[in-house]
Image 1: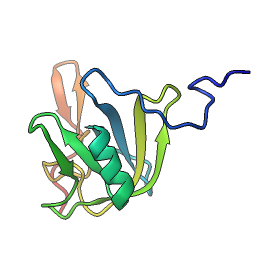
Image 2: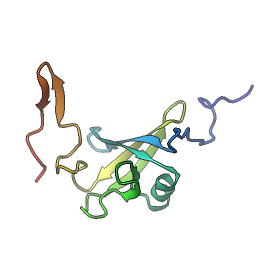
Image 3: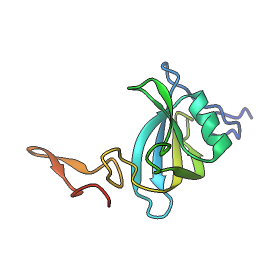
Image 4: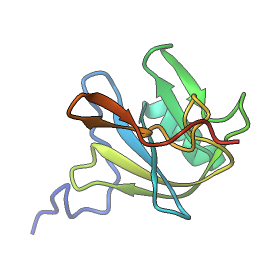
Length: 125
């Protein structure tokens, strides 16, 4: 029997045409989705080497160590890989807010009938 990507133990990330894979960060304690970002091979290698989340900033086009300037480091507890290896689930222990707005996570609004509605009042203090 030939092992398919869905059944193999080999880690072979399916990089997009831009060289990126989607990474979803989830709080290990609460299970809350904190943020969605992207990783290139260098970001993944830095994450594996340090045990802290590193991402690729598409807007700045640079490697980004989450929390390097803010102190809101995301310590990796576990990395899960989806069935076709084109998305990573980072189970992290956050040392502060995940969102650059200062909120605990980046999902503080929902789409309502009249546009976006705030569901989280303000930055974490």
